Image (cartoon, rainbow, N blue to C red; front, side):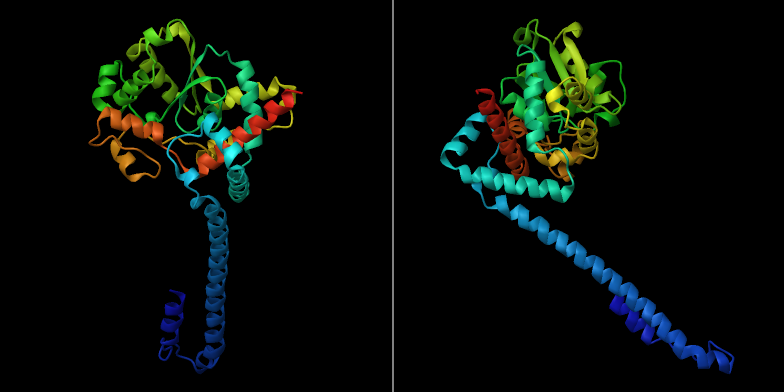
Length: 336
């Protein structure tokens, strides 16, 4: 583009544009200055482009660490059993995951590293009773609820997006009429055992990152009215507030910044670390065009629910493998 600007400029004739001889005589210096400014501008863009290319090279370098490893491209979340198999049979995969993950954190300036998550998981596992059912909403809390589910907690992770865009209605029937994907989320909750017969008198914590609180309230209505869980057994929790509360009441976490973790959540930096899809309940068209989204279009419920469960990303599988490795180290230390 800038070569074109220079070519076009060179073809411009200034004859006739200046009436005085003095202006004509000054034209060469004017011409040189303009050319110099345009060249400097073009050079600036070349420099910026070079910087961008360098960043792209760096990105490709750490992406390539895991892109050719079948383990990181497998479907589904990292289970504790899968981690133990890797640790015993292919420990080099853990080293590759760590190299990738810490390069990625450095590149994206993300504070929330696997070792911090591991320590938070251990603290939350002691804080929350094993009898509690945790319903983790969307991508925001799942960087920490994924490993919690592999270390003793009863967690159901539900992909749900864009609930804050939905209109308010007095009845679930009206919600389902306008937003059919919301009913599919309700069906998924039942499919995952969120029913009165399964839950009985246990407490349920619905966990999300709350900006307006609208998603929490909508999911609470599903759990209460559609799944039949009594209102008094349901608690709503903001993941950032729960993390802050846990850090503030645990001296072993005094070096961990809840504000920096909250910032990572707010800026969606933790999204690369989670094996959870986006599923817009507001409009399924979003799901067909947005990255890391799952659409309900032309799918049976069982097919859709399997996609929810099987969804994964190499970056998140690498990150979560590192988290489980850090938890394993903590467990080993606590034995002595």
